[in-house]
Image 1: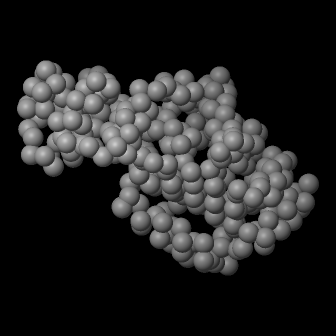
Image 2 (image 1 turned 180 degrees about the vertical axis):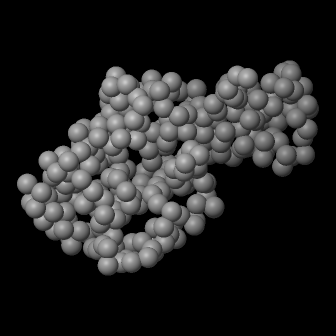
Image 3 (image 1 turned 45 degrees about the vertical axis):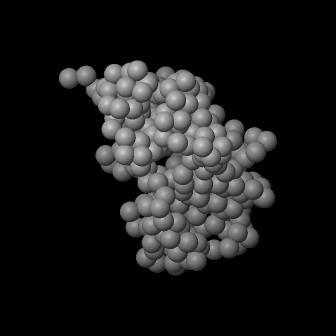
Length: 284
């Protein structure tokens, strides 16, 4: 049996909004398809995101559904353009899970990223040596060439931190992450030094969750919350043994509350930076 076609998150969002508009107007799918002079199955694929809708069809549906508000029309047109637009990350689509390509796209569009990590450092912070050790350990059956490509992807993602309009990045890192000797003591020492440098960046907040904090609000592990620019919803992201999950607002509120609770237990930014610097010196 052929594998199901991967539908991008942005295509799903656009399709869902079109479905909501149609149903709000009490219009049947077959009638919308007839208006477009399309087959109902094609109109159905527009709504499922399997086949991205093109501009003329989208404009026609917005007229049919009575969307007169200029901002709403503009936001839907912008989303439609994003569905068709290819980014640098699409070059890796055949080498990573579709869900992760979606994540890289979200990361590139986020205005704010909040992250909690309790096992490994956030990919945006990782040195090349640390990233290689992490990927090689997790993907133990992969060939070296493939590991090289995944490391390349991770390093390329970090460019958003140096862009003209970088996202606001707030992170909470479990103390155990700082003590886990990924790649050996030399690798960890260099990684902690890099992290100490990031802590000086005014657009980045790094806070450490100390061992003494005890039990906390995310015993199941790491997660991210991505505050998106219009017209996208806020999205929470977490990885599971069965793959990644995305949770949109308002359901993402659970992750926001968990992050707030973790923040109350974490050390302040200055104290965290001092701890990271002290640990980096210890490892030298």
